[in-house]
Image 1 (cartoon, one colour):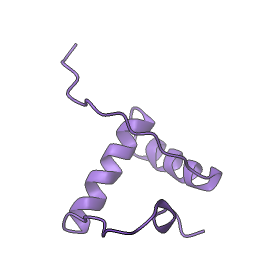
Image 2 (image 1 turned 90 degrees about the horizontal axis):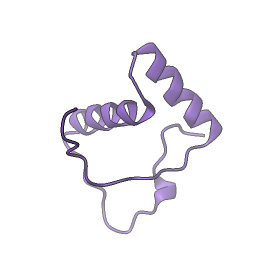
Image 3 (image 1 turned 90 degrees about the vertical axis):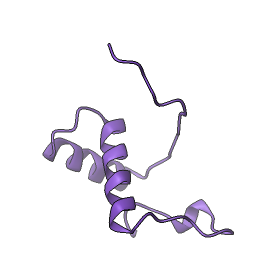
Length: 68
């Protein structure tokens, strides 16, 4: 197997609706795992936004996959 180059673990909490959206997208695009789906979505989101860097002072409640 190849050497794992991802040295950081990131844990996130999702609402049931966010998890359903993630899993639906993952299965429709045939991603092998939730982790790979999240990495791909992060890559696409950062590229679409021209590499977004969060402003100081924002909390996690300001960011969500879905606008619930």
